[in-house]
Each structure stands twice: as C-alpha cells, then as structure tokens.
Amino acid sequence: MLTLQGILLLFLDLFLYFLAFFTSNLGFLILATLFLTLFGLSYLIARWTLNGLTPIRKIPRSVVRFSPALFSIGLQNQHRTFAVYSIKIKDVIDGEVVDKPCYFFKVPPCSSLSTFYRHAFVNRGEVSFDGIKVSTSFPFSLLKMSRFFPLMERTRVLPESLLPQGGLSLRANTPLTERDYHLKPFRLGDHPRFIHWPQSMRRGQLLTRGERRDSIQPVWVKIENRLTPHPKGGYIRSQDSFELTVSHAAGLAYTLLRRGVEVGILARGSTLSPVAGEENMAAILDFLATLGHYEGPYVALPPKSLVLPVAPEGHQEVSRDAL
Image (cartoon, rainbow, N blue to C red; front, top):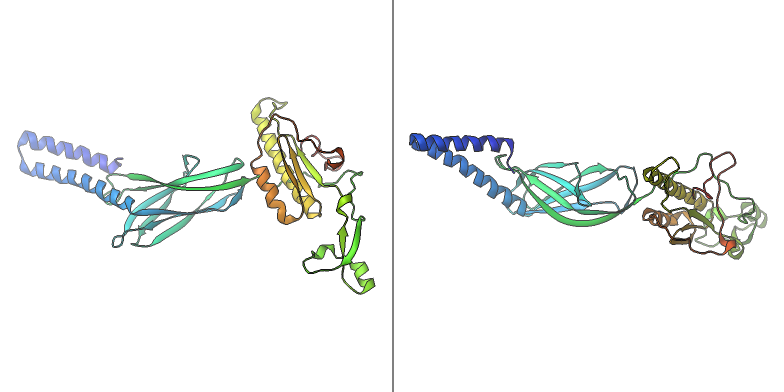
C-alpha cells in the first residue's frame, strides 16, 4: 500500500518520465528511473524484513468481563546479521484487528522484544486470538507492507462477581446450620476455620468440626437462561438483564462458598455439580462464562435437593426470579 510520501513521489516520477519523453532529456529519465528503483527496493526490503520475523504472544488463561487486562505481544528477529526497523504490530481477535498498535523502532538481529497493551472484553465466553498483524514502511516510507502471522490461542472471559445490594440470607427452612456436625481430632490438612476452639480449650487438644454430609443439602443457584423479550421492550434489554443475572449468580456462588456451603448451578439444558471451597470458584466461573440461552427445560432434580438463596426482605429477590 502506498503511503502519502509514496503517492507524491509516484506523481513526481510520472511527471519526470513525461518531461524526459517530450524533451528528450536524459537527466530526467535517469532521475525518474532512480525514483522508480526506490519503490522496488522498498518493496523488496520490506518483504524481506517481514519474512524474517516470528510473532510472540502471552495471554492470561482467563479475564473478567469489563475489566482491562494486559496482553503481551512481541517479535523475534530471525535475521542473523541485520536489524529490522519501524515495525508496528496489532493483535487479531475473532477475526477483528484490535486497534491498539504497538511499535518497535528497532529489533536487533537474533533477538526478541515484547510489549504490553491493555484491553477489556464486553462479551462472556471463549475468545480466539487468531494471530498478529505486522506492518512496516521501512526503509523509505514509500510503501507500507503488512503480513498476518497466525498464532492461535484462546482465553475465557469470565462474568463479573456482582452481589445484590444488602447482602444475602438463606430461607429459614434450609438445613444448613453448623449445629449439624461432630467433633474429631485435628489432622494435618484440615482447614483452620473448622477448628472448634471452645471444645479444644476444654479438652486440651485441637478438635475440628466434621459435617455429616448426608444431612446437609447443597445450594443450587437457579438461572433463567431462556431468551424472552424484556417487559420494557426488545431483546437487547433482555440480553443485558441476562448478563446481570449471570454476574449476580457468580457473586452469590462466591459468598456461599466462603460460608463453607456446597454450591451447584442449575440452568436450562446444563448443570454444574455442587462444589465446595473457595478454590473451586474457578470451576463455577468457567461454567458461567460459556452459559448461553437455551429454550429447553431444566434438568430434573429431586425436590429436596433444590435450595434457592434469596435476598433479604426489602431487597430485590435474586434466586426465584432473577436466578
């Protein structure tokens, strides 16, 4: 692609050729041929420069929706004796070039350089990094040459963990109280939060609470993922409401996991089996990241297994309608 300098020089070159033809002036002909040679050299050198480059990229395994994250891109110069100059690189995500260019003035021979750019994603789900677009106008800025280097990588855009205003409480008939436990001696690997300090002081040894799992029900966060028109009109608001629902579900799940409760996700067409412990929050976020709309029914669960968390009185209900 011609640059502005290249276009001006090309018109000047054509003008000199016309002058040389009509005036039979050898000097104009030599000068016009010299300018044309510069175009040829620009093409060959830029092509040779791009053929000796290898792209480099490092991306996080997952990012959070709307949260800017750093992505590393760079180039490795495969030429053994020549440095490359004036390089511009852009990432290509899902077939679209990210309009956040990074520049390298010089990449020495047999070396690599990397830099970072900040980017935030709007939609949840899998994101495909297709490759890197490299451009240069070296050496004379007459031609801008570009080349696409395929470099496939994937990352997952997780939902935000939003909590309903006012906190969270459980239904009164939910048998999730900590009174349903038995004491056992502390063993290496037991979490310190389960140590029963009053009984440990009385008996002179560390005791931990062991829950009777057969009598404790997991909490299933139920999500309505059917695509229906919003009451105020249109499917765009409905999609926004669904995204907010998924974010609230992530926040609820995190709160419940911190309380030591097993949490499962129930949606139309798919479920996530109950997990416990904050370290398993990643599994819930991965499930929610790819959750989409589905018109089928919910997966059947035994009635006693379904426990829905709700917001405190006076706040918007979360589980029965929104979740």
